[in-house]
Image 1 (cartoon, helix red, strand yellow):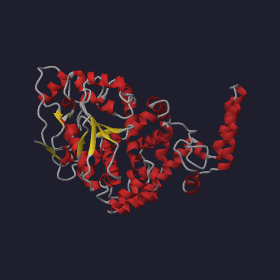
Image 2 (image 1 turned 90 degrees about the vertical axis):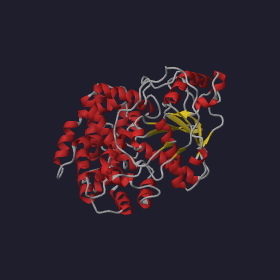
Image 3 (image 1 turned 30 degrees about the vertical axis):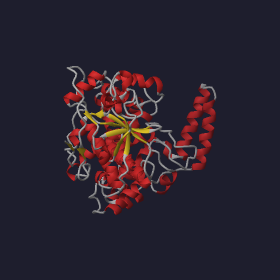
Image 4 (image 1 turned 60 degrees about the vertical axis):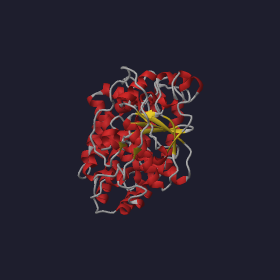
Length: 475
């Protein structure tokens, strides 16, 4: 019997389990019963706060690679050129702030572009660190004349829209200089100084550096409400604890506040940490960062980073699948799926007979992926209070099956598919009620924040990929 016990053991190991295939073919083993944890195996453990933060940074990094203007390498170069100014600003603050964190905020907020703005309304976020006009004038002692800044921005746009000449370039430079005077958010030095003043103010108010960074996007007031809902002494609750120890079933009022913001505010700190790590890697090993960027942008999630196409994990054909089942590298979907809150779609593996293979051959997963699926369903049931099952529509395939599927399914790729590794499964986007849908979404988001899975919303299903080290996180 496959038993998943409780607890999260934070052993950070390299992903992947080596190549598959080869060896003598073996009979397909019988499906067995399995059980889920009695409690919550992902419950917060205060002894491992740093590990939670590290995993959350990794689990939140994909968007930086996918959306950085010109790509992360170009963004890293722009941001790195600003590091002397960043260091000066960080040291000038009362008590100072961490320059690497300030640099990460610049990366995340503007991608290193001093003239970045959130929209045409200049009362909104503007400049290197995307400061709101109201915050700039009301809190940070910055000079911002929105009307004058808007007029100059329009004039500058008209000049820049015309063919460039030396005279027009000089005119544009004069307009930019004048705009920096009437709107100090466009001045990199003053924008950085303003951000440092904010972080010092927030640190004094909240008692912690990590909470100060969180508040840069969330706002001090919202964060104070979340902390009040959680409880604990001022300055004693880290953001890792607030985030991972709040859920629909624990510290509910804190979780409600974080979830209600709806603008990824709750993930902002993890993205800042991801940007810090990215800039450090750009300096220490740019070739490795380039490879990471390539893998992160090949798909709509980080699945190819978790399981690279050249990692030797794909199954070529039915014989390779049978050998993997025989060796225990794959396991059949559980016989007691309904008891676990799962329903196996009867169409799963429907192309098998066309390849001369039984459907059951395509109804299995890597053991850690199966355990994660079981716990995902168990968590959904525990939170929703609903026994209705989640329908699993797809699990492992071989490359022959994938090629046959891609001929008639526009959603299937002719390129490398993570399904051919056994680390991925699809869950039908059909739920018994809103409670189940919300509980499932919480589980997806929480497991991705732990860098245990990555997921994509497809037209008919949620496509989930499980990290290669997930087994070590479920002891």
